[in-house]
Image (cartoon, rainbow, N blue to C red; front, side, top):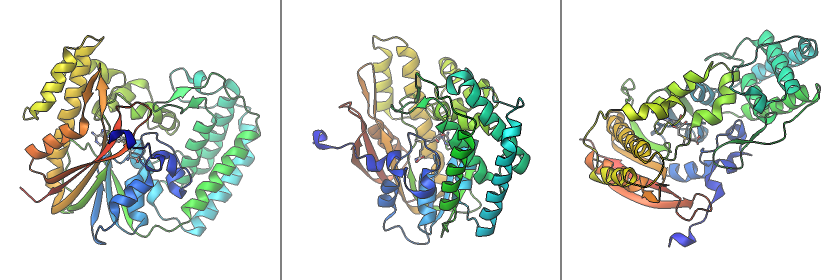
Length: 408
Ligand SMILES: C[S@@+](CC[C@H](N)C(=O)[O-])C[C@H]1O[C@@H](n2cnc3c(N)ncnc32)[C@H](O)[C@@H]1O
């Protein structure tokens, strides 16, 4: 049966690349608009839809485009900022003013590239941009700051900064041939005039797609999904989400360039601290802290402890550390599913897209282990469906867990 499951790129970020606002900035682990559309069919008009791990806002934006009210959480403030910018409505006058401001900034650009400007403290920045390219994008940034000010949470100019983020990644030597980002060997060395031309074409695309009206609404809130606080009496009818998988992928790692250039990150230490708060976080300090981590919740499924023990006894480097990593992942997902209950409506439906992984040959069956947590926590009508094969590795799949909450 598993052998006929296909990779289905239409269910991944790849299919979002030509879909209006969904295409503004990439995040490799994002899921596809089509998958969310499939899960949203037959949801009642007045339903409130939640994505507690919202990433690049795929669920929130699809739901809002379809006229629903959506609420979304993420631990990463940059993604909250991006989600809110993505789901706003923009008037034609506002877009025209932005365009005029950008034209002024581009007039100033050439003079500004003669001077030295602020560049972010990204470790090994020369791996990302050649010296010339770095000067040019720093000069363009200075010109944009002069016109629009720094990006802030509620600046009306944030569309300009989304375009700048896109420029930053398109001019970098980052390569996205794998699930996790790497670097190209050859660095791009652009001419001074190419940077404003590229910026303008990106900005044009963002303005066109921002002009489309969003019928519903989506609100993005910075929240740790393991400790959800109540939402002013709003109850959730439907959850559609894709949490991190236990695969040691760091979202901060891929989002770093955007986050540094928009000043959501200032130094490497902050990236580690943020990753420590993320479920499955694995960047810098997050890994070393695992060794002294203490469980807050002991009532986890027995199956979790069994797989953790197998990993611990494996013959591999860091087997003990990675067994704690896996334990903490399922512990954190259990905390999330437990705290979620306080904001669910009494017949809420849940859809979780999750992927399995392997550690030293031991299969970590994420879906079964999460289902075991759901049983302990009182969820019902639990079903499992295979969605797609993740890559050419025969063992890695993506699943959709569906469940219902009928109250405690
Ligand atoms: C797989 S991504 C979601 C991708 C999303 N479906 C999309 O289409 O872009 C998982 C997200 O969970 C977020 N996350 C990790 N730990 C979290 C936590 N404790 N609370 C809230 N969000 C968290 C990460 O920052 C990341 O953006």
